[in-house]
Image 1 (tube, one colour):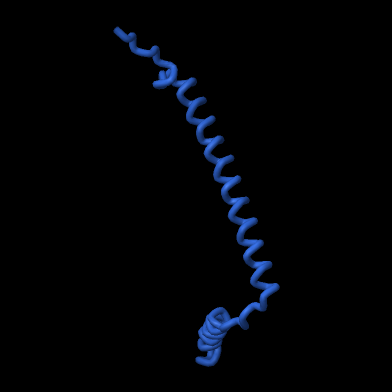
Image 2 (spheres, rainbow, N blue to C red):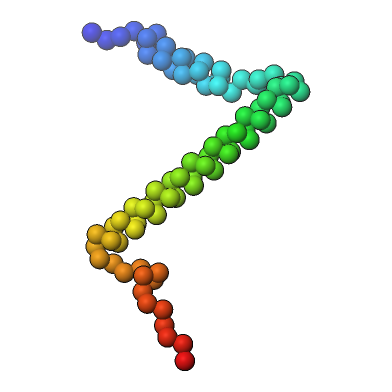
Length: 84
């Protein structure tokens, strides 16, 4: 049983409508909205920075644990060269 051509066009129309709505232009923000958006952006930036620092610490711990388990000596653990 074949579907009528009308039902083949419906998904294409739905996708086209969704894309059109996604590209719709929003009205400009007022001053209060702009200030609130700037504050939210600053908070998001601080949160991202803090999350990145925590991620870097976790990566450093994982590397140190790997080196310890494999018996790899690091430059910090190596003895300092003697000065003449």
